[in-house]
Image (tube, rainbow, N blue to C red):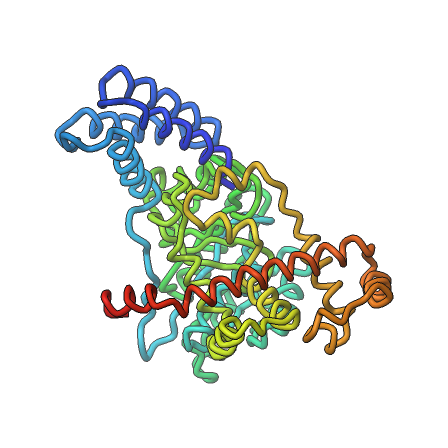
Amino acid sequence: MFDDLSNKLEEVIKNMRGTTRITEENINEAMREVKRAFLEADVNFKVVKEFTAKVKEKALGQDVITGVNPGQMFIKIVYDELTALLGGAARKIVLQQNKINVILMAGLQGSGKTTHAAKLALHFRKTGHTPLLVACDIHRPAAIDQLETLGKSLNIPVYSERSASAQQIAKNALIQADKNGNSIVIVDTAGRLQIDEEMMGELKEVRDIVKPTEVFFVADAMTGQEAVNVAQEFHNLVDCTGIILSKMDGDARGGAALSVFSITGVPICFIGVGEKPDALEMFYPDRLASRILGMGDVVSLVEKAQQVVDFESSKDLEKKLRKNQFTLQDFLEQFRQIQKMGSIKDILGMLPGVGKQLSQIDIDPKQFKHVEAIILSMTMKERLNPSIINGSRRLRIAKGSGRNVQEVNKLLKQFEDMKVMMKQMGKFAKSPKLAAMQKKFGM
């Protein structure tokens, strides 16, 4: 989402690195470029003005350390201010013990409210809670059906009634949650194409009935500043405690994410990063600031890996790598684990310094499906021992995968090159020099 902004900010930082010291002249020029980049990203003008003023003040003030590289100092100031702009510290959701915690979902129609109610339920179930979804959107056609379908697919109970009011459904849902022992109740409410008194009146009445622990406003990140304006109106009426930004994996400019906290004072708690039920992440301002500035986000990358990687199989894989016994079947299994972490472009984007280079290459997710199809068209014997794959076998694999022989040859060549590289790495791992280094540093 922030590719254009990130590229422009990296260019500003690059120019600052070429200076010998920070002066009013070069900081003014840098701030002009930053302001232009933010405005093109659809960030609120007032927010941009305040942000650039703070950066300029710190860059020219007492915070600059004598002798420090101007580019590094500038990056530090921009990073700190960008983190503050996004909300400062991450706001973790604290749920009370021995009590039903109610989360009320609010937002306009089409923002992803119902989908993110289910995503939240899955998120909290992973942390040991027992969620109940409540279908209080009685106005949108098929809204109840949608929530019931999502609940069924995730094996999460949904409370619904077809002929009752939203207020009555909310009351009865709390009684049901008490009977079932649910620790979290997530209430999906009605949305509209625009704000109207009827919708807000119903929402406030439901809020007064369920007395929510949290009121989450779901904003469509693709709508830019308009999402911020709507969030402010909802906050004024129902006192929102947190914001969920949906569709953060899209190609919008990102103005909503960079403006919403400064304008509303309501922190972003979660971001939706895809259509799958588990495509919901806690929001960390410092990590997003780091990614926008091209510094990567290694912490989030490690957390993603921890969620999907089977560490027992990883130990077995390490032994195979050391013995140069890595097979195409091992490659397929590792390949699938990486795919569970999200798109390859997103994963690479979390590596420091990759962002700008990444924008210059086209990563087609279909190519990975093609690789998988080719390997799956091989027999297990061929996957375990690719050296037996002769010309006739290659032709059969190509036909079975729907690809051409050249693609099969290319994959096998890349695999052999990778094995050679891994063999060299294995030799280095066994070298006396590495052992001495490990001993020296207590590894």
